[in-house]
Length: 190
Image (tube, rainbow, N blue to C red; front, side):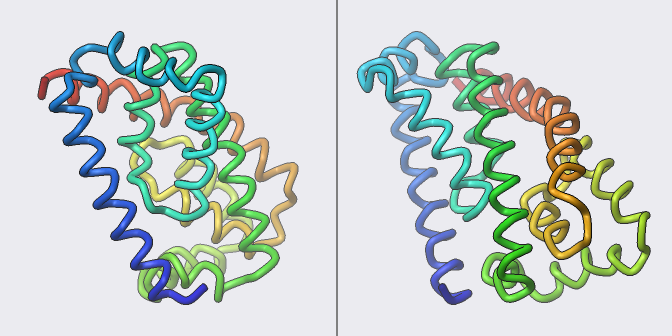
């Protein structure tokens, strides 16, 4: 996959999510969670699996803005199940991104981010153990570029166990902040 294909898919994905969001907005799905839940319910037991898969993909191939999909999960499935499905997809996607970057290295990461963005975060790798602390703090905070950092972590000698522990313990707070703030924003727009 070339960087051009990744950029194109990101634009197509972004346009697609905007069209989907406009459609959902015009149908009242953001202001009426029951309507969105009914829509997803029409896909039956596959709805949660489809949503988790979307969350996994948006971490590995950033074609959908992650914060928006988190809010949609909470609106569609309610606060508890929405959080759980978001959390499962984001944790699995983060682990996959880490492993892909570990396997394919810098060339894989550069398919999704600019050289400047890559260099900005790779600079932390030179700080040795401080990267682990920086990574853990960034995952814990809601505004960090988690997807890129998961890939950068794949270039380090951080163990999969340590990485997974940081993701599992760090994601809930950031996810909670994203989900609640974006859900409130979308409700205010409706």
